[in-house]
Structures are given as C-alpha cells and as structure tokens.
Image 1 (cartoon, rainbow, N blue to C red):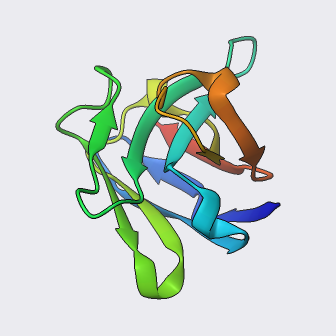
Image 2: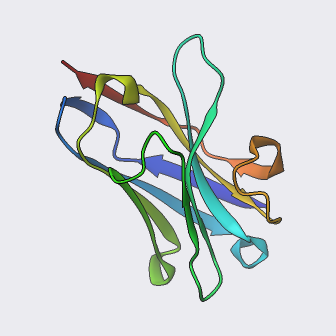
Length: 124
C-alpha cells in the first residue's frame, strides 16, 4: 500500500499563489506516476496534473491550468509538489493527490491510492 498526505491548502486572493505538497510513504517503488485532482462542490473530481516517477519525470497538465501550475517531485523526500500561480476563483476546490501504477495518468479510475485532500479557496 501507499499512504499519501496533502498539505499547503488555504485561502488566497485571486492572482495569488499556493504550493501544495503530497508526501508519500509505504510501497512507493510500485508507483508509476503521482497525480493531482480537484473537486469543486457539485462537480466531478477532475484531473489537474501528473508527474511520472521514472528518470524522465514526464509531466501532464489539464488545459485549465497549463502555464499557471507546475508539478514537481523531490525523490529524497518522497514528495510531489503543485505550485499554483495566478490563481482564479474557479480554482477553488478540494485538491487530492493520488498514485497510479499504469500509464493512463489523466484517468481518475487508474489511480489506486488517494490522500485525504486539502482545501484551496480563491477569493475575488
């Protein structure tokens, strides 16, 4: 199993920044990629960004966050980060990190383990 813990959420004004962290423990050597998803009230959980755990560290982003969010990974700390800049009110959601052992990094159903989530609220 893999255990995940998110942190770094909070309240920020539009145009501001937040840096989310996802700390992993357990059988992390089985992980192909870590992804970030978000879920706003009344909406489905949606893909935000992902990063593979191999040497290439391939990143993938949803169109809505390209150019504003950056995903990165620190292998020494087993932690994945999501730097969020130029935040908009529509970015308000609960943010979750998750891990997958297969290639379909944008497919929510491909992810095996999930964190508890961290709330991000962007005010106008």
